[in-house]
Length: 471
Image (cartoon, rainbow, N blue to C red; front, side, top):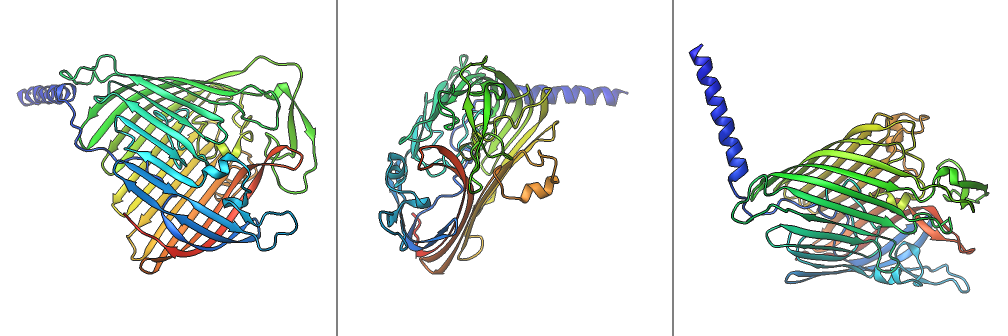
């Protein structure tokens, strides 16, 4: 009996000691946990062939990386030549077969301009976003602007007491923008513990033209507030508890629109329904703006070789979690109405970014809810593990098995309007000469000859041979 009492006192003392350590020992900042790295960018000089939706183009690509101290500059000079052009058809095109007739296209020549790193007091990146997350990711998580050139800017006080993170999706045609501010009101340099690291944050992100097939629709807006407790902040790892609450305003409720039948000649997507070909037209009468809400309670862990996040989520019907994700630019307005239901949804979200060895980085994220809707991200990047071989791949899909007509695993591997896929394989034939094979599948927004904006499937296969370098 005395032995048990002694053990109880020992455990109490151990618990108090650990708690005291967590609350009072200040953090160190000699090291930063791994960051959410780009999965689909690199430098290259060469040429080859591109096959876009069955049409062949000669391809020349110059992709230099130029380090300038804390600055970094990357260019993406990609030119396609169409030998079969007739009459007034352009012979020289930009990447993806686009003509040189917009600011967005010209800005794509700049892959990125960067200063410092995301955790530094001042950081900015002008260029493409492969996997951008704002805050804890409840509103924007894994967002990509798909080769457009946007702006990501972080400004924070040197000891982390307050800061602002902002983004803009496309400098040539700005449509999606917003950011998050945070403050640690109790933080004191001389007394840095669990309570003084308590953090408050607020997020606002909007899309001012979510559905270009509808004239005069309201912008889509998402507003969030969050509270966080960085339990442990050390030189090699960080552990956070947090809660995010957000509301969304849909730009066009289903009851405030009518569907006009159309008969497209191909599989172009022109409406907010995935199984019909129609165009959304706003009625003259406006309806009350619908507001949906969502809440996520989570724990996040970041270390030198791993980032892990786990959340429990609950939403009202119609709310889309992490709506600005990798598929947002590809699928809006296709996803309006996907998440409509008769009751609140509950479910879990988990994410892991793991670097088991320096040559290999893995990404995985999965979410699932009680109405059987799921979303998946998978990414991998390998460099140097196999001699002369490099591999990059990214796949994402949402609303897996939601239609009920196909099984979960069948729908998971099928490429359709709910998915995006990119794979790049490099082989070093004779150093530094490389052969590169790329396959890409996604949807993109295009403008017809009649001036209407619509979505169409985009498939691109390219084979190139050229020179690659590493700084």
